[in-house]
Length: 144
Image 1 (cartoon, rainbow, N blue to C red):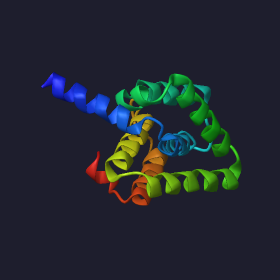
Image 2 (cartoon, helix red, strand yellow; image 1 turned 135 degrees about the vertical axis):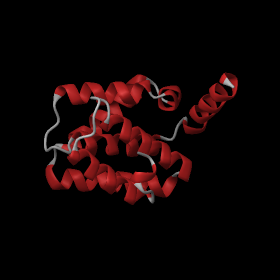
Image 3 (spheres, rainbow, N blue to C red; image 1 turned 45 degrees about the horizontal axis):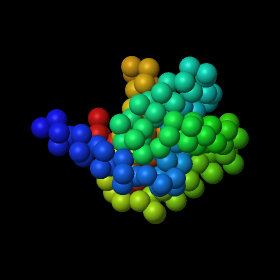
């Protein structure tokens, strides 16, 4: 059983390798979740980066430095007011257009993990996650 799980995870990593549009979309979702309360604290950045790098599939598909660069880019956008948030949402729409349903489902799960990185999901984070799930064609309640 463990072997099959490991095979699925490593296969997922290979499948994602080079899909920087998906990585950018995942980081855009993470940035929106981190910015849900109106500010991004250093502890949130650290927790978000750790969650992304520790994710078995993402960590296997992308180098830690790639993940950090993509997250930094999207966090900078999140701090850019309404224009920045619009750019993040466009990044997510682009990822949706270019990736399979299972990859988008994984992206949503990563965003949920980011929201739960501090042990709880804040009401503002849930609102953001509801919007993200809807944008991707999912119902958040199916994943909580």
